[in-house]
Amino acid sequence: MKTRVNYTILFIMLFNSCVVAGLGLKDTINHSMIYAVGVGMLFLIGAVISSIREAKRKEEAQRPRIN
Image 1 (cartoon, rainbow, N blue to C red):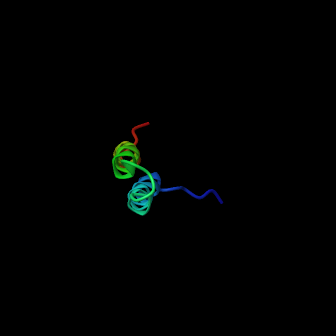
Image 2: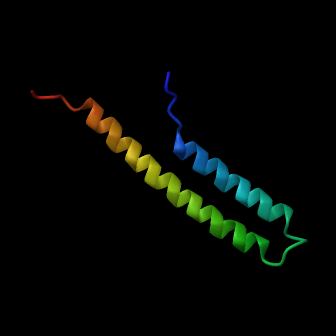
């Protein structure tokens, strides 16, 4: 059985982990929050793209097929 991975949730969790890592390293690395939010934004863009692709896939699956 093939399992489908929900990439939108994965990207959002990666964004959250970037922000947490940035907060955890704020006293160790200079500008760590700026780096973390920058990388996190890339993950949020990935979440939006994967969400749009999934919505298009579901819309095509619900469209009636004409043979």
